[in-house]
Image (cartoon, rainbow, N blue to C red; front, side, top):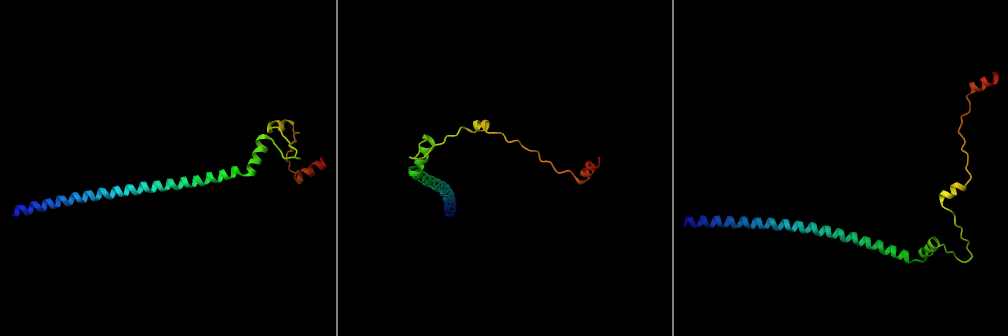
Length: 120
């Protein structure tokens, strides 16, 4: 009988250890699943913000102001009565622009030099 009790006690300890290991494994799996859910939530939020930005840009592109700006800038069109002035690129402008001579900044002579020039 005593052997039986010891056998059942060892069996209960063994089953308890198995349950404990199973519980630890399940808790770790839940933690990993929570991390994956958090990452997925962050990704969803990022995609939602990106989607809002794309919607905003689409509304801007469909607007009259944007279309008019593109017509003016890319195609060189103008409204009736407007005059279009086309300037050459910067390099050509620099070549044809008059050069401005740069003056050196000269400090006035000190007083002793002025007296020296006056007498000699």
